[in-house]
Image 1: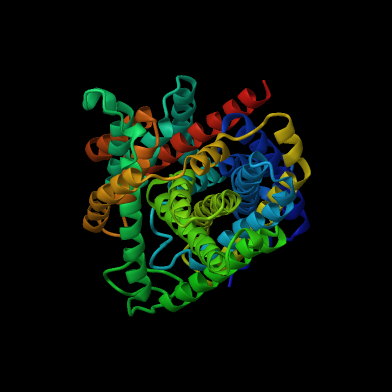
Image 2 (image 1 turned 90 degrees about the vertical axis):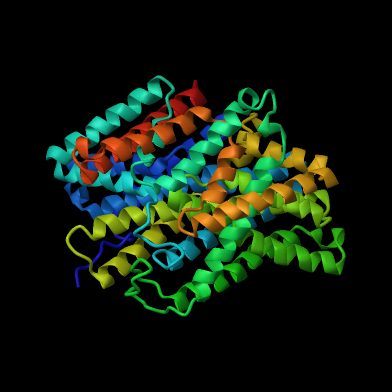
Length: 521
């Protein structure tokens, strides 16, 4: 069996850690100033490619490049999204005594989510063969950097288009992702984005963004998706490497996936329990409420991960904040005290981003490792090394927030999402809101059931309706149309996907450096 590079090799580890520390600090700064975390995976890949082409020939190894970008991505998303956001929630609530328990619990939640997707990636619910678009883009960049020639030219063409679109404020990532992701999923997302953005014009002043219709559709789609996923997991199919003509070939059996998910829920329980007990929040609740809080905290963290993963797999988007807001509203209905609601919102937000990000990186590694033929042992070892890399990256992100988080917040670098959580807690939930969400959950669930578990159309329509970005919707639908009518004229599916991957990568590169400049200017 071909041996995979270890993340703990000195060259690989030292370079990866240096790049990851930089990514973690930069992403914290950008999140504090702008409320976004750019794609650091492609940045890590470009650093590794550059090393391989210049001073450090050892980094010509695609395995090493993959491990560098994986750790870099974990550190960026871990620090900026998974840890800094929950840390900020507690800061805004004025409970400085809970910042250390929150840091510990949220950090564990993020680490557990990485572990769980590492265990269930390439199972029936999360096949490696499904889109995971940013992972495809990163793999294409690494391969083109290694091979050069026509692939590099096609990638550079896409990169140029992505960067040029960013200069003129055109969201080219949606256009590129449409060539990689499931077309029906992208149509649902695009339609949702257009309806949200232009609803006042379409419906004579009626603004969907000021209602809870999007939340209802998202809840309905999520419930249906979870039902469909559960059916897949409970189906009597235990093939370790596939073989069923109705489902994609996989390397993780049904039994192994079920076991990992069960263990994941148990681990998430540990994370929320640490915050509650170390933070001394038991006295704020009755025994019954305490049990409910622990159970809901673990299940909600798991649900956030699964739903973000489904959206990330199908569309390249993971609506972590939207899902957390919905789960926060459900938590309000359960009658928890305000500080417990803040803890739950922070804990949920720690899990989804890292789960989706690890999925993207594993897709990159899967594509790189299968270039010369599929080797099961090599694939599983490479996957394990990537999980180690991501765990180290997230841990570096935790340390970055522990060291600099309070300083950033005292300087006014406060992300916007925790403010949304705080406002929702203070506003509560009225019966009219519940009625609206329950009513609109029905079409969301129906769309999800009709489209099937592999497309997540109900969820993605809800995601689109929750986000005000009509230009991204236009970009998504334009990409679907161009793919359908002109893909063959562009040189066929492979050429189109390489160029599309370049577009996604170019958009990500522009977004990263533009956000960095705006954050420090």
